[in-house]
Length: 412
Ligand SMILES: Cc1ncc(COP(=O)(O)O)c(C=O)c1O
Ligand SMILES: Nc1c(O)cccc1C(=O)C[C@H](N)C(=O)O
Image (cartoon, rainbow, N blue to C red; front, side, top):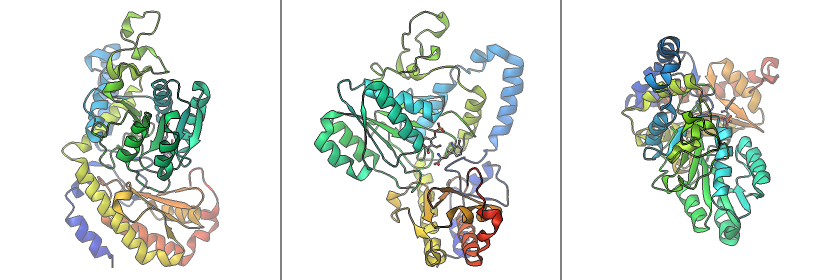
């Protein structure tokens, strides 16, 4: 029976508990939306102050070399690479996830000329679906929507036609974690190139890009990496593809000699060819500061804590919510979960608005899913207990039927 005392005991035994102090979280808030926008790391405000005043303010244009702004996209890429099982020199940070997804899909399709199918998830995040359609039109491909459990069978039957296989490691709605190694191996057996979206995996759980021989991956940095609103995304291209990967967005930062200002694009050697234009330097350097919270922590420790939080949330769900019309959407088995538990309820939107009014922040995805994302670096078992019991109290009292909570807002 999960009680507040049980939560306290789990927190006392948690080796990551003190990491929470590295974040500037409002004391009274339980924050379970770090799978959408990560919390503010304490290192960020002071770093931004220095970057703005000393680097931009005093060093002006010379900061590109003096403060190595030029090197930031690869330097920070390597730092993220440590969390994703990628050896240095294979990740560039810059642009939005949507732009990187476009770059990745076209680049992947160009690696397999003559094949005509782009296979993707019917439940992929909307931006990925929209971009897949657009890339298919541009590259003369057809999109085939195949749910992950069916992809092996599909590839066995029609694999020789498939150029690109594109999935998200964790389903953004349900929190279901897919087996990246298995899907990647199936794509390779068919001779296809695989593109993973790691938005809901990066910083949340261990990823083994090099070991699993992933071809290309993209992901945002504002969720579990806590880079801040609009912080730039990353693209990983495995070293083996560096000489042949042809990015569609051939901006001057990706040129072999950007400051020679030559006519004609010649791609830079290595991962630098995926650079495009001037990156958002302030956001990049805020992200770099935010990533310091991962120093001295292994992703395995983060995963162990995240699994414990998820198990505890599901125990609390069974005790407090299961009998009140809520349904557990996320798999019970830890190995099948990302760092998020989703529960469904017909009044999901109103319940979430009422919950937020009580200081517990999650979010809702259509049609009826309440999402609770927990970042192991700053969420405690006590937070989980408070979230579930508060939701129970709201559901029992019916306070979510108040017109304040039945009126839609932009994001809930
Ligand atoms: C799986 C996935 N891909 C892409 C995105 C977003 O792309 P962008 O950062 O371009 O808004 C999100 C979240 O917004 C996401 O969950
Ligand atoms: N990127 C977002 C934004 O610009 C506004 C509000 C939310 C987001 C999100 O990240 C949503 C998130 N990708 C999701 O899983 O639904």
